[in-house]
Amino acid sequence: MQNEFSDYVMQKRKYKYYSARKFWSAHQEELGISYERYLRIEQGVQTSIKTALKIIKILNLDESTALHAWMRGQLTDPCHKSYFKDPTKDSDRIPNKLTVNDVEQRKMLEECPLIYRIVVYLGLFSERDYITEKTIADEFKLTHHEAVEIVNKLKGTGIIDLRSERLKFSGWYMVPDNQEYRRIRRTNFRAAMQLHLDERFQEEWTHERIGFRRVRKEHVNTLKEKIHDLFIWFGNSDIDSTDEGIAYSFFAGGSPIFDFKKDAYYWGYKNSLHRS
Image 1 (cartoon, helix red, strand yellow):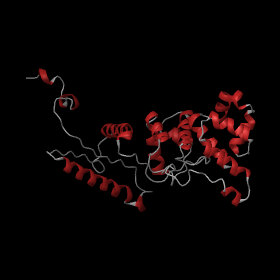
Image 2 (cartoon, helix red, strand yellow):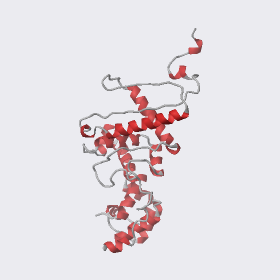
Image 3 (cartoon, helix red, strand yellow):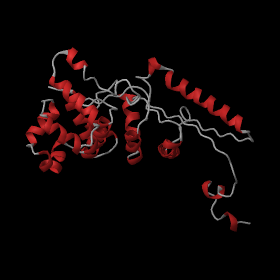
Image 4 (cartoon, one colour):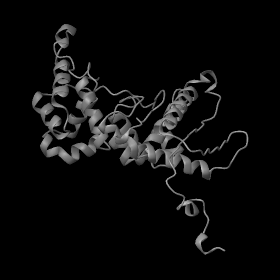
């Protein structure tokens, strides 16, 4: 038994609270209902407008979206339901699941960068394998509690299905390349690069190239465009054999060299100023 209001409540509760019990325990006096009754609301049982308004306030839900969903749940005739259609459905507020493009998702990845890696894992394997919270805990060496918290965040931001035990995500989860997402992109790049350097070099799989030259700004922009095209090709090619293939990481980067004063440190040349 489900309805849109229940889904909306459950989605936002999962983002903020580990369980329905945790939420109810923290707000039982404000809610004024038993835990069993609250749980039934999440499970899809319709509730009164009085209780709905309390939940909307406590979870800081968008009131218009929530009340439209609550009203549709009161009606059975599709024509009547259409009078209370979701005002956000035709707007840009609907998230594209392939892109981090709203404040909530951005905040989530800034607070827990590992979530990005888990979405990548789901994108690589969830169509083929039956992945659950236990799978996530085992694969990433997390406790079950930690895995549930992360899965709750993914469900709470609409990245994976709200009610299914099987965790599925198809495609690529791209972070926009602009200033407001710079912290997330740099964290991901730094972590991926360090992991690459710490792994064993395998001749048949690994490649490492660095290029240096003097450039004008327009050449840098051309380079960015060509690398972008390469990533598009890499992400969309070899579709038929991905089930038999291995997970593969590919990254590229570039930046201006303003001076060489820090090279001795970053390239491991200890005490260089004292060498003769």
